[in-house]
Length: 70
Image (cartoon, rainbow, N blue to C red):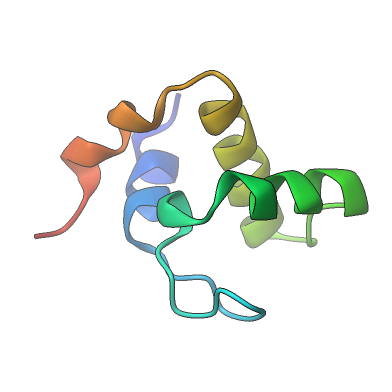
């Protein structure tokens, strides 16, 4: 997996919606699942959310901790 994607998931904030301002990997699983069902947004954010869905689905959130800015 690309480290840049992991870094972005650990540090980028949701730009819109109910969870605007929340770091992507801290989004509730139900919210990410909602995007999976409705369709991920176009572009980079969609790629990140689809990757986050797979990470959460497989219980791999611990992979993002080392990339989180302190």
